[in-house]
Image 1 (cartoon, helix red, strand yellow):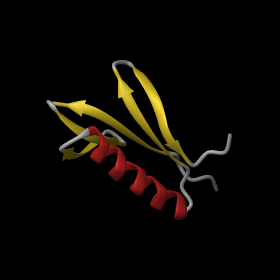
Image 2: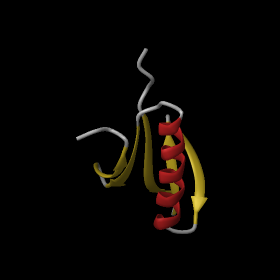
Image 3: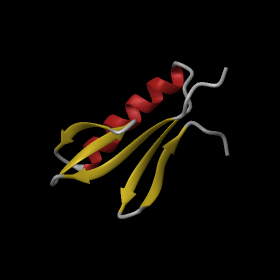
Image 4: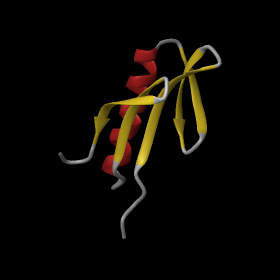
Length: 72
């Protein structure tokens, strides 16, 4: 059985940095770097539990991959 891919999306929402996971917001974080660090740490733990995971930065309508457990 394949587990669902956990996508941690970092974005500025309502003037602060947040993490979106499955359409739920987590945060706020004081800086983009703090949100990225939190999301990456959580994604690494999800990977250890068997979930494929990625951390993405939302820039307008585009996404930048910051970290992924997926093999290239």
